[in-house]
Length: 518
Image 1 (cartoon, rainbow, N blue to C red):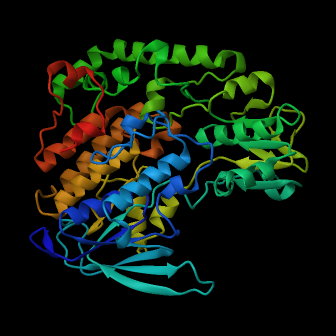
Image 2: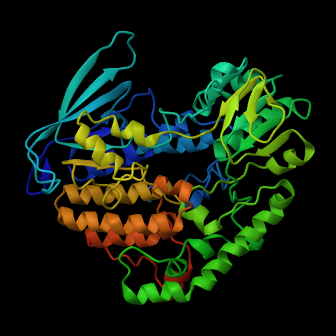
Image 3: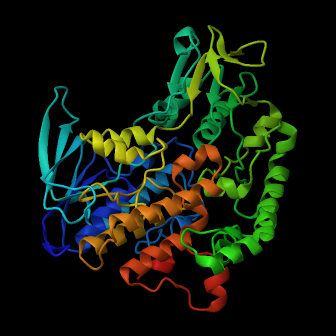
């Protein structure tokens, strides 16, 4: 046992054995805690265990790795595929002997807090316990067990389990359609051969335009070709990258270093940094236009009517940048993929999808909704307490959960949420959060008052609303300020936030996981 806020702490319950859950487990063990990880599936990996077969890593491999467990030399691809990423995660869990702490096929149905608690008090100052109601998913009968733990780390992520289904006009929902409608979540669970047979010989329409939608459309076009083109219905075009070298320059030198963050107004920045960000705003605009010009050129966006109405900085600040599957726009050119931009709602008829402004429906036999997930709904309903559900939802009912350091809710005791807020490299960000949490639980530093924490949350909220594309503010992204964010965690832990060995490297070279090795 180890010290926790001045007292002994025995058991930490971790919900989810994806990347965040494994990291939380590893760093809790390093401080002498006894974690138990509840995983609803039969294996580890989270979203990587049920991802479309052709999906590749969306950030370069050096940016997406564990700081103390580099990629093996045998992995030579810069953007490894789904199976390779999953194998890397599994080898990490084996290397640090994490699997013995995991209870597989154990779904946490609800959390209830047992103890006296004042929501204006220190979240770590209570002496209560959490009760976890856990279901064994291997049995057909409802068999549950109650586990009692001293602290809970929720690592359920936001891209799984609860699909986001659009609202449809009256009498124009999927029931009006004679074909089949599924969510991309169901498609992702199929192995490549099953998925290919499922779409083969069908007129398929995909709704959405982020990585899942593009991957599915690419797979469908491979199977069916120009004879049965896959139609992609797009509400919001994106600045999806062809690669990470716009006009031959590494993207990391534009947006992943300290100098680039000087151009952005930051939470709690002070007068000097605020003036500097304002002064550098023309350069901020130029950087964004530089990348936009490259994307427009490579993908011929103007020709396809797919130029976004917002900037690349907005895209990055919303964590909605995707890497376009290889040959995607070539398939658009050849006719095996059709793009239809639709800024308003859609519905169904017997023949297929009905869009406002189109005289004829998009005739389909299969419609795949790549419309994302309702992460906030999944997260808040794990709490039995209506009060805690309201705290999670926040004041504006968005998906931006109000968390201090994107980890701790000031008004929920003895609980952390890891992996719900996004960055340019979610693995790297989850790791430093888990290290921060382990140091906090070990008593190396204390949380500020609830008032101070909520003020800090408000400052970050202003930043997110200022720079994120309005539709995607809800994703609670720290993408364009990941170094500034890491600096705050480093200072809390008593680390030197400056991790490079020279002035030039510190300000102009990209930051990544290996800068935080020790």
